[in-house]
Length: 116
Length: 107
Image 1 (cartoon, rainbow over the protein chains, first blue to last red):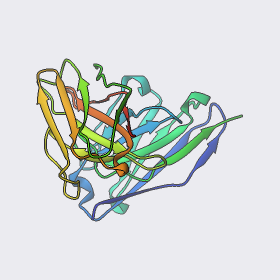
Image 2 (tube, rainbow over the protein chains, first blue to last red):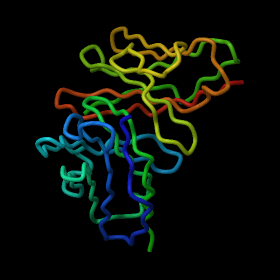
Image 3 (cartoon, rainbow over the protein chains, first blue to last red):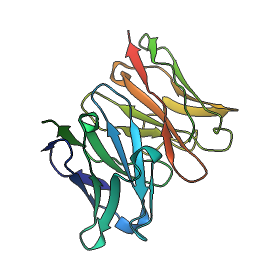
Image 4 (cartoon, chains in turn orange, red):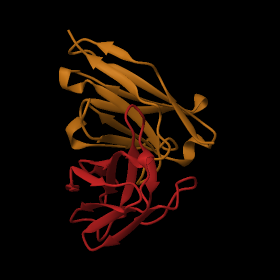
């Protein structure tokens, strides 16, 4: 079955960058977009952007333009999301999810904590 | 981008029907999707393309669309349905929008 497994929790200092990985299995990696969504503690879901693993094309939410980069390595069926210039407000669980126009399934989430 | 508006909370007794609405100006032209999220877990898709149910989702979950509103209906609510529910849609450039979420409480 389709499955996405994400990298482990990260602790970063303000101003640093974080790169989260998302490894796909159980399907053809290039067949579905990878979406990235984050969720701060006690808050709702916030869409960050998507990437087409086949072409590498991306679309980012305006809020994250200039700070987020989504890439992939098709040889290992893995997508990446890098967020730079971290600030405390970026502390959240970051999810990857597969699909075009929707998201299913989701990865288990990666907690990114930004703290000095 | 545009907004999707959900009620913050809905409460029902076990066995009753819960209806959660989601309103947005683009919904007449874009599909609505619904996700269920339980504490400490990743969301799961429960309705796609307004009214279709993924494999493995119980039949008591259904969706509908009318004008600028999509609705998630849970018939015969069970205690295990207590969760946060999020609607989601896209705009013409395939950027996503999520509603603010609705906390379903089973009394």
